[in-house]
Length: 540
Image (tube, rainbow, N blue to C red; front, side, top):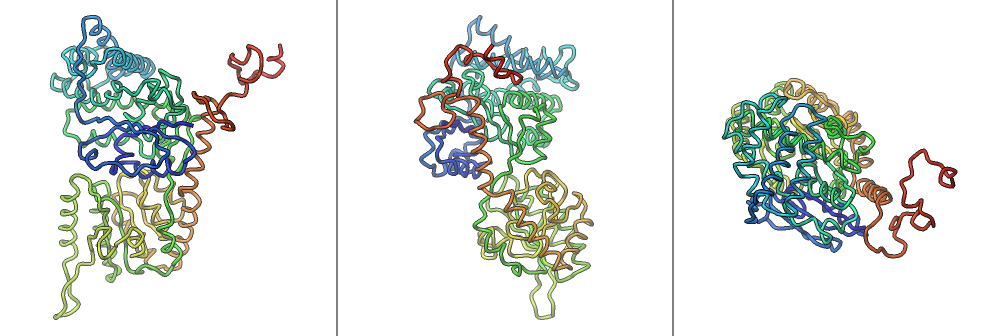
């Protein structure tokens, strides 16, 4: 079959989210053809180029969410009236408190704008016009508007319409033709949000089924980003409401949703997803590079704690350092190795500098004797350096792996430690408990004392460490391999296609290329059959 893979900020670009997962999916499902429709987030991402694409990727079409996309078209009186009607419905859905009515208004406005953009273009200029600002102002001041948006001012309206224009850019793309998304058999969105917008339109215009996979919930990520951004309260409320309405529409229209864990599944349910459409599919990871470490139970320094991951405030290395101070009081010979990923997020250098300053303050370099050089028990390293040239060797460096995050989606570093048969101490955030499944110790976040006690319990009990590590490796091999992930999506693709046959002439022997009833003579084959209809009813 032909799959339209929809991404935002990831594959086929060399950097970005879900890049590795998408690449494994495309390469693992080689019998299928893939058309990639990618939205980029930054100029830097585009400059980094693409990954090497396998032959089953037939073509790639890209568009940016960061650069202006003005087609130069402007609206006449009739088009302005249509735009005001559709944009008014959309922002009414954003501003209104009543979920049922608001969701319907939002959907009507969204598809109306898409049809207008397809027929006339000009959506970029219209969304940045005075008409858009006045329409948004009317919706914010209308009776029944949600709390907080009525206090918005003109700068708030300008900021909001600017952000809405960026989020709605997929409506204006030239992807929605018979030679584009109209030619695919299934749209598979690698995330929610803007990535799923083309899939919504493909279903609207062509009836193409939509599959949405979320390993990190886009709505949750948006809420966190909005909280940290320097925007006014009305703007934050408007943008959060827009993303919430968009997520709800995506979940309603998707033929199937595949959250990567129960944590993401709960978010989807809270946003209105039908439980019957939900099917948890854990992300798959390559195990070969961790095999040697996992089979050697004696590897690793029994007096070393290891932290591995991306350095950012959400990882709460400050709490980890305070917890390690408590560990050192009870067991002075213990070391802590903080091993960072080579790719750093914006602001990571400042955070690392702050953590290093705190480590120097908590643990002054102490020499064992008068003629020795002092050494700090906390080391800051990077994967690829002389001490940890590979990721597997980073996990092999210590006997216990620690995760101290206050915010976490699916904890990739924790799964990697499990493949290496390492005992783990983690904070109870995101999908940690679901991933660990009783094979490691879990403590509350922002509690250095509890984190220290759990680390000491494992450092002092080698047999327990080995037992938990072996159980963790067995669990990871059962649930989190690439093979189980590919097997799940192979079955899901066939299942969805069985309800929506392919649109082009297929080779002989391709399953579900034509519905079975198409070969049965009679007019009843064109009529829908309810779940309660039996053979006797059809004969009648």
